[in-house]
Amino acid sequence: EVSGVTLTMTQAVHSGSIDEGGRIIYLGGAAGFVIRAPGTPTIYFAGDTGLFGDMKIIGEIYKPEIAFLPIGDHFTMGPEDAARACGLLGVRQVVPMHYGTFPQLTGTPAALRALVEPQGIRVLELKPGETAA
View (cartoon, rainbow, N blue to C red):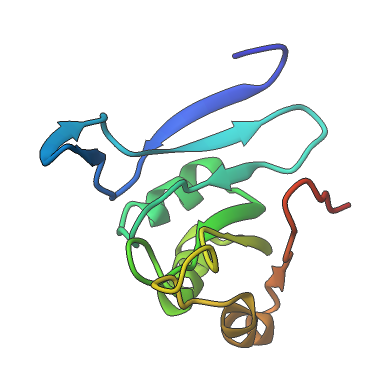
């Protein structure tokens, strides 16, 4: 707990290394976080991750209302897996992340929106530094 905000680290499924001069350097395990504070919605920040079944347990225990999910579809989930994650988590809003920064990341917020909005899940497409009410 930090300044009234409770942070819970969760697993994430992603590599954690870089290639430096032909040598692979391990950077540590991937992680996500559940963020809770009085009077605010519970947030699940997945970090860089693929879809994993324990997202259902995260949903059952912490009941997040908003999820920040990667949708790039190369190193992480794409829109289809992110839509499935929304269902496992039981969220009402999703913020797509980790997409569009280089050509290999082909997932788009529009593709995610087409999959989740019919289920009543709102997509919050934010630009860096932007906030949503």
